[in-house]
Length: 277
Image (cartoon, rainbow, N blue to C red; front, side, top):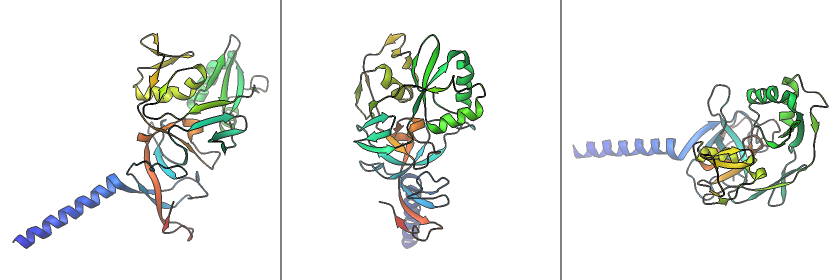
């Protein structure tokens, strides 16, 4: 009788271990994008290490994460990108592209456009429908200045019939340096950096802190300093049409499932049973 109980207990322990591994440590995913085509391709099946550590998510690793913006169905889709910016790194954004630690990471840089205000409302409604975030640089009595990636510009030109060359002309160049937030980072709000930090701050505070013009506000009062409560990452795709930090901004650690570490199925025999460093 004791031996039977021993087998039963052993079986229960094994089942619990399998469940723990499946739901808390390792999960299998099917790749449905070519966002990191040099590493993985559509149809590949991979295992993802979900145990967060100092190196998970890690620099240069393919990571699975959940979008910080909902899709047309209202859900937060799972995405795959390369992790290139770690908490505390400085992202430099220029007309030539994105730089982290002096290395050019993305040549599909944003361009700045001046939009006449007579089409502002229709433009904003179209951008919302296309899930294009508003990155406002400045606004005056006649126009609104926004930043768009090449992909976003193309989407707008295809869907916003009012746009004409005179209403949608490239503006001045820019050069921003933004620190990727980390847990404990004390931030002093300013007009430019608020464009990049606003979404992260709103999520951390459940909307209690909001951007009003060029200031961070709380109950009608300007906030002079803000301390971030999470680590964030900058994720990029090798595919110009894929969604990444150019569109979503900084990705919180809580949205990242983990590093992709093992490919257990692929049409490419060179990737089958391959450990991804």
